[in-house]
Length: 412
Image 1 (cartoon, rainbow, N blue to C red):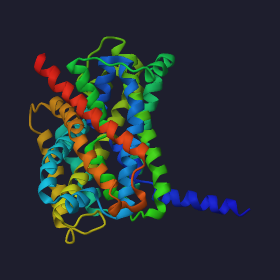
Image 2 (cartoon, rainbow, N blue to C red; image 1 turned 120 degrees about the vertical axis):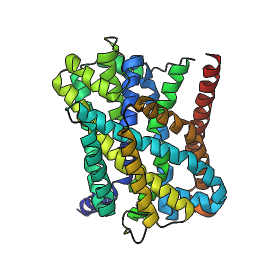
Image 3 (cartoon, rainbow, N blue to C red; image 1 turned 90 degrees about the vertical axis):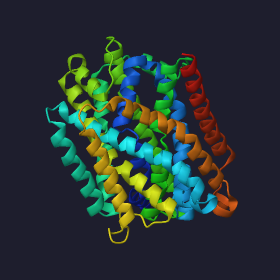
Image 4 (cartoon, helix red, strand yellow; image 1 turned 180 degrees about the horizontal axis):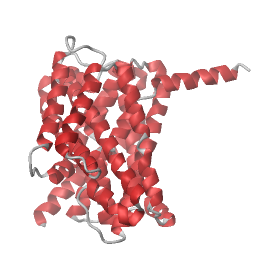
């Protein structure tokens, strides 16, 4: 009889700490990510599905390291990098990550505009209203309230699973392709592989998840349950990503329909999979775009403030953390404002932002691996050999993919 209360207590504690892992992972399926998955499915069919198996393993290892460092040290990743390596080194890394963060924010508001245009809402109405809502939620909210909103947004990604089922793919082929690796020495294929990895394991995630763990007050005592939070998030994000690829492969690729955006995918699904499949795909894009438009500028604001030693956190007031809130405001206003410029080329911004993520990821992982293997910093919580192996393989793989991309681009 004593085991039941203890078990229930663990469940209550788990739901109390649930958040950083699920939220950070699901933001990966943002407008840029959904565009990348849609184009991948429409262009290459089921042949890119195999990449999600190593992504699941790598994403868990990388996210778990961030949670562990946050719980053990009580400090964000940028804060630890600044303390160990100095301001100069992180400044150069910060430039690339800030540009990537701004590009991602632009992509999210592009997603808002694209998704609501399907429902005949003009972007000059949808984008300013969405930007104000996103800004208001963060600036006027507390961490606990904001986290509840983000968790609710994470649950709405299931619309893509329904769209996938309505597309009626050949499930036997889907399962076969998931476990059958394909590789081509083609620049477009390499760009897509880097984009898929870059959007699923993005550099900004490592800064956000660690900052979220610190701000939520998760300690080393809650570390094991926090790992479960990471596992739930990793499974959710990859199931949704696979469903997007499969839905587009089963409809667009099979019918030879080329697309450039997730908006194209949603519109093209209507005659092929039905009106509701199209509407659910568009709704998922809107939800993802609003969700990520809140998180990505927030992650960048955390990064800059921690790196330069300014106060940061959603629980702090504007007076307590003015630089943090001004940075967040600048990123939201700039990202939304650029989308309102007539005839701006959104597709290159959205796709290449994901590729930039893939290029920057090894640098961030090298910082993380050096920090988490520092016994003076982590004590008994340093990486195991298995975790180090997976993390280094991920880092080397991204460097190799990027090198292949440069070589093939030059020769082609």
